Length: 578
Image (tube, rainbow, N blue to C red):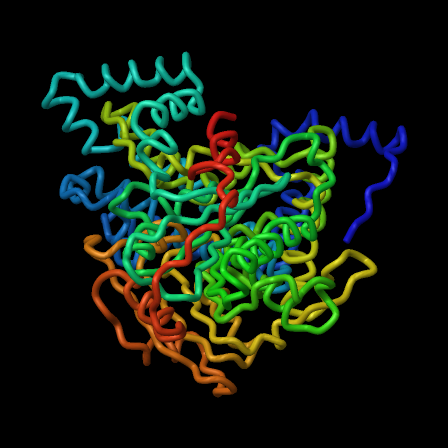
């Protein structure tokens, strides 16, 4: 892991120049983007045969488009932007067909023999972004649904859209989101309201113990480690969709880490600091409060990656100096968490050496990676739904999106310390150190950990439409350890697939268990063979936890003086007000 060094005058000059240019490229490295374009352009330029093929294909698709023939686009027929019957009428059917055929052409043109895989994927993604902007569904003259609605209502949708646009100009989106949270989704009043007490607090995290709600409980507590990219209360949203409240109601004693929102003073916090002050300090506190009862550890997203590192460190002798003071692990559950970053999904498109260095320069001056930048990255990855379609409805149809607790949580962003952010991108994404067995706990002089040392039962969850932690990437843990793994594949995306309470409409999941030391099964074969179940995956996880727990007993009372204050604690409120 990199050790900070004194910045020279020439390095400072370069950094300030790059930081000044950053807004022009949306925070993306212009070198990285230029290399991808050059790789594509040069390979196309020296391939006249390929140029002829693409030209012929373009002519064929153009002719098909003039006939309103959608057949060449195949699966694109399911595009929600074009589902309305009005798109079948001339001339809109021609516009729709032309757009779909442009998508088809770029799918073929973006990947050329000889290009690096990373450049080909980046070129394809940027082409899709451009097409997402230019789709006829985004523009007033070419969207029949918008035209029909405005004709029917004498332009009322456009007038309201004009007012929405003026409001957006006058009030930044972050301020509107903060006002909405304060009015409808206030932390501690509307969301994150499951009763509990803070039982540990350090400079980086708090540990919340939720008050048992049943006469008897499973002795082994559940420790939840959320990602520090997000606020913990995604797992304790409104009472009806709170995973924490659900677990407590089933008789589990639940502990939750709540991360601090770092500022410039936390510039030099490292991944090791997050490991030590997060899971390790939490396990020390639980060992004291629960008499060293074994723990069901769970991590979500990057918190799951950190919990996997912690479990591997605890499994290897000599890595954690005070291991005997920590509560032992009984099981490990990982939700939408990657341990192998060789195929990290679309987020990995913008993580290469040039981009990481570019981000490091920007973060060095401010001391952290801003939450707004992370939110912007996710918006960019899903620009069709989160940017263009949303803007079309707000400005052309005059329809504001109805707020929800999940949307309010999503707008409540957090920062990441500059050094930790760089280590996380370098060691996990660029070097894939955890999967390769070269990840060190304790810095340069520390010891490597390996997921092959994990032998405790694992419950692993992926989601079908996850672009942050693709389920096939999550599934790779089967390759990295021989532990018993129960894998559940839930419908939905990275957040909505996890916040999937019983009774939620249109939810399903597949589940199957690979026994310890069992044979490798490719993801496609697993998907075909795993039984599908309607409803939420939460009850299946509860049953799995119960099956790995001891006989129920009365809940253990908190010792006198253990309570440092009521949930949701101080750290999340600081995050909330920033």
